[in-house]
Length: 255
Image 1 (spheres, rainbow, N blue to C red):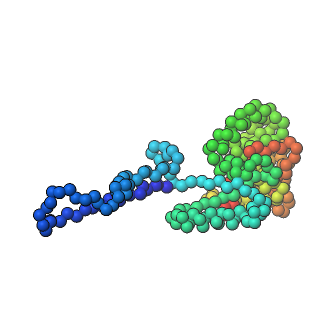
Image 2 (image 1 turned 90 degrees about the vertical axis):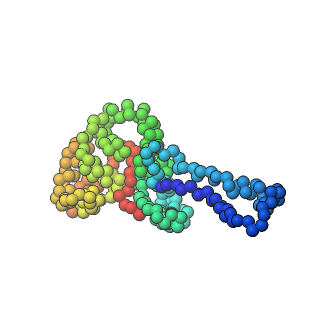
Image 3 (image 1 turned 60 degrees about the horizontal axis):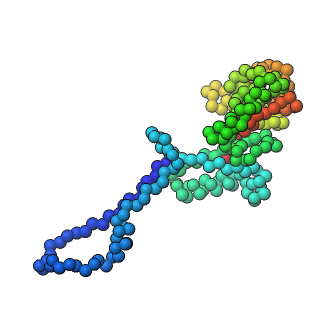
């Protein structure tokens, strides 16, 4: 986004040859007040830039974090979708050339914290992440030798009794997808569509079973948190030994 300065308006005076002798006597003052003339000729102040833009970069847009859950939206007589569409309509009215993109931020039911903070963490806002790291500095020491399973969403890691489970990227994505839909059975077709949509060669349902089997083997004696629902798919079940940290992540569903 670039900001243009309003141009300074200048007036031009046309000189013509006089038809009668020129008088050297002082002329009366012009009818335009001196204050108005001075104001018209003074340069206009420069428009402020968008915060501090580092050298060699330019502002290309902005992010507006909106924190509101579905129940609060319903209490206000609206929905998340209507809010998104209203903001898009306003943007199109003010700046028709602007492009927009919206995604919903998910968190497990009952997760604490302000809605806007959940959204900022989900969208990896640098200031929010820095604040989170500072707040968790002391908690890291207690993570070294805990018992049970720690599924750390923001750091993309799983700890089993204090030791890293060593999941691959795709294995963690698979576990995360199930965790964020806790208690719901996910069929194999949905997993393929959501997690392998960008891959050139999408796996078949048998391949999904192989991925889940490898994931469960790395979860060792905690493998029962990933349940197999025969004939349907898989489900994440949490129990007392499972702790989910910083459980906020961008939704795969886009408005």
